[in-house]
Image (spheres, rainbow, N blue to C red):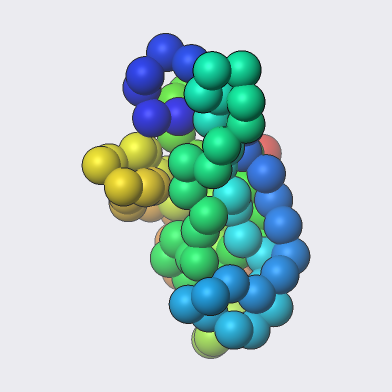
Length: 104
């Protein structure tokens, strides 16, 4: 994920964090250091409300929704501390269209 050549693990969790007290879907990223698993990024959130995610071509592809019920598929890449917005695959769409784009 962070380009250091080692294998990382992206884990989806449903919980609160220190900076966001509400229980929500989140992405945690772990790395290997001397044969041990260590946190690389324990995400509070990416952009909007996370529905689902997967790893595609070196980036996190997130299916997200906003408070207006609109959906987006967003790619994030690693930058310094954590995932950073790269591009919208699709935005301001309905759930069915977003899921189709997410699964391509």
